[in-house]
Length: 352
Ligand code: NAD
Image 1 (tube, rainbow, N blue to C red):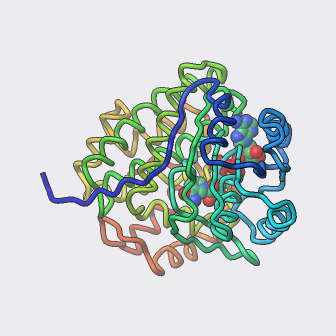
Image 2: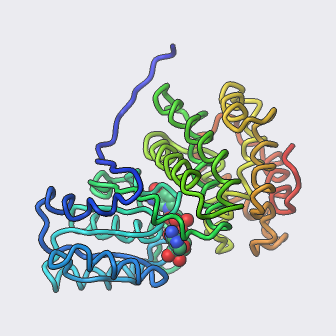
């Protein structure tokens, strides 16, 4: 066994079907009396139903969360927090809503109870990305780590098949990069392998039948594990490329991960053979990169960045941006090999 450091992140996790029923007890356990319920406009009805469920302890609903946590949206929610004497936050939704909750917690240190409804995994991390004037910045602070996470499988049944597929591959990407991270350790690697295994088995079933509860439960379990990996160790080239591409061309978050992942894995394969074997075994495929590409195809998920709106003329500028302040990566960054990686992901060709 190689030496390692493992730092557990404190969070209470309640997992199952119908677990939303425990929300009033969780609010009481934290001693909260005036919570603000957060959601996107698309999930306003869920937020209102949830506020009904917690009765007088819900001081209001703010259903204005948006992708990439724009600071002006946070400022709008902060006005309600201050006006209504809010003492806690309940977020129901995906990474966008959880981002808003974290942004408020950063400014107020209010406790957060988070109810994730996608597989993105933000609930398990102390990372917050925010945008101001179109520029995205990311910070790490324990202030933004939610106190309680309630995973209720029932709330994921409505996640449309396409969104389930790309959100699930977004989660798998966290686990894949955790396996070859600089701070990798045996506990996180166990979670990563199990997370990839659970999601890669469940997602094809979900795409065929979004209401299959067993597959939904396995996928949410996998998403929790993968989110924990993201919160525990640093990410590498794949996440750097996705942040760069998403920011430069305003590409959708989870879809970008889906198109890039097989190529980033192929790039890193020669430098991380043990991680590649673990990923391939977890996927039940002979090769990690090809297995991830085939999974995306099987799920009907996008495999070409050009289909997401990235112009071909952007390939060189994306490579140049990815080379600027790069993340640690197991394989040194070679500009011409990186260009090949991005060009293949742009065209949707198989990884090599
Ligand atoms: P999202 O939160 O933007 O959700 C996408 C859409 O799906 C929204 O309209 C949402 O209301 C809807 N939706 C969510 N769950 C649903 C359900 N069960 N049924 C029907 N509709 C549902 O998407 P996401 O991929 O979860 O999050 C992406 C954002 O999260 C990005 O901004 C990304 O940067 C951030 N993120 C942050 C971290 C972190 O650690 N800070 C980790 C992962 C993602």
